[in-house]
Amino acid sequence: MKYSFENLEVWQKSRELVKEIYAATSTYPKEEKFGLTSQLRRASVSISSNIAEGSTRWSKKDQSRFYEIAYGSLIEVLNQSTLSKDLNFLLETQLTELRTKIDQIARMLNALYQSAHQLTNAQAH
Image (cartoon, rainbow, N blue to C red; front, top):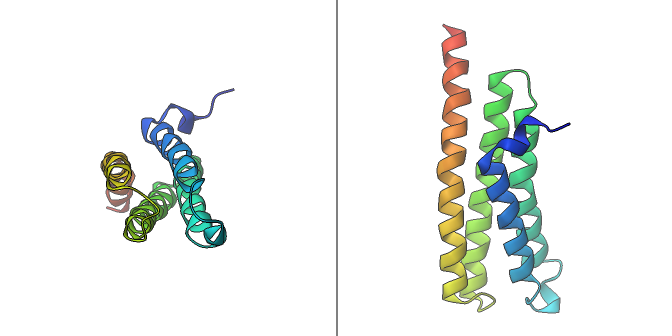
């Protein structure tokens, strides 16, 4: 059986981002294992997890809330990636590549949120 979220391109892209974050953080200093490495990995996993969970919610209000949480985690990944570059754990080119993917996921998440949110507002009236 295939679940609906597995068909979402934004979920698929967020999984790709997780793999890239794991690859990038594998070169971070050992003392960052419980710092930025852990934070970045957890935030990136949270994106796809919240998309998946949100897609299973019955109410559009609940769905949109999970998409908001996924978006917040995405911005967390952007912030932590930027800090990683500031600390010379990431190269400028790596940050640029990550940011391109983050921007794409952000646009897709925004569209998903708007779709669920508009249905919520329409149902309220």
